[in-house]
Image (cartoon, rainbow, N blue to C red; front, side, top):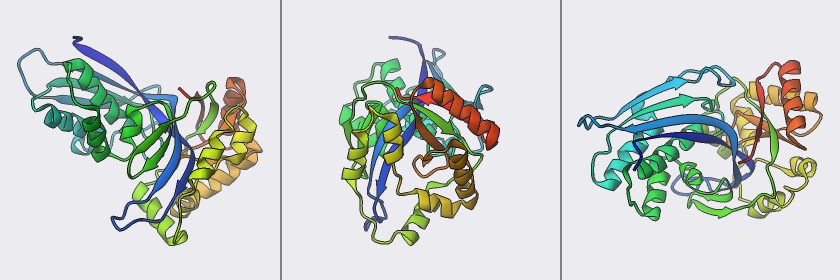
Length: 297
């Protein structure tokens, strides 16, 4: 049994997303094609050997993050902290660790950084302490932490249905290369969905549209042209400055630009790593917004 682990916590992108109106429980049905990509937070956890059952969590913004940021939320609100508490409850005992989280994934961007961090804590504690927590229990625990957390416990590409967290793995023939745009704008999920309910009354999920788009992954230009996200109109209503940035980015790139999740991050699918790098550089120069080349895992 190892004494410490260093875990990479990948960001996710919603390549396609269809949303419906809230149900009686105020939950919105969603179907999304989600992929993990090569932008990572880093979580280091080590078992305490000093007999102290206290767990400590140090959180910093990594110096090599693509955009500057700060950890401006409390430890009690942090999903990593909450994931540790939930795992102690599931294991029925203390799991004392020292933990360090280095953030690179912008918060409020729709890239799932907090959810990925939480999933890494769950999986890391399983390995670090040799726990035998049932897989279904882990999924239920993850779902209570956040709607995207269960995805990070599974394969890196999947069609995900929420709120029941049904996930169908979707193998890619090879990595997809993307230019990822990182606006200095936060899009609170609840606010975006509030606008969605106002702007799209009676919205219905179109699973077939999302699945159809996933069949184009062997042709990146065609795939980029056919992707859609039902939440973009709501995110643009919540943040008009994001609408203008999207317009300028699309004009500079000369191709469709897509929002991921509830925003604010945007992306384009590119032919290869070279085009993704050049496109990210172009956006940075012509639009003045940070952009990086990433690939699917």
